[in-house]
Image (cartoon, rainbow, N blue to C red; front, side, top):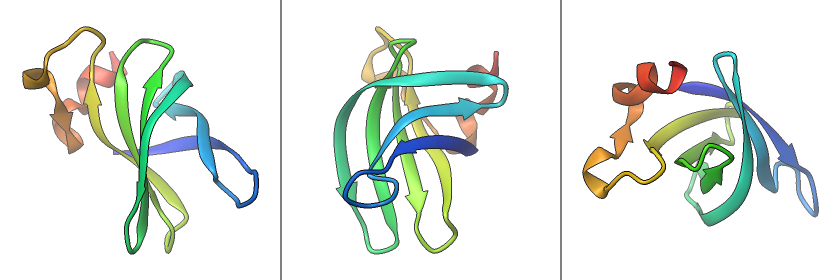
Length: 92
């Protein structure tokens, strides 16, 4: 699911996400839990102000962001949603 992300630009552009928009909803990033870098993508596992955990992926070659995984606050591992499967839940 493509999303819009506002980032902190420190020693490099897009150093870390500050907030992101899913449809009309805006989520503030309260914690960067983890980050890792692939060959073409940067990944950020973040906790948002709704308590949910999100994995945001930045595609360097396309200069675009996607939501690749979501887990609601207080949910167990079985409720992890990937890709488009959880898209409608996020918009409601």
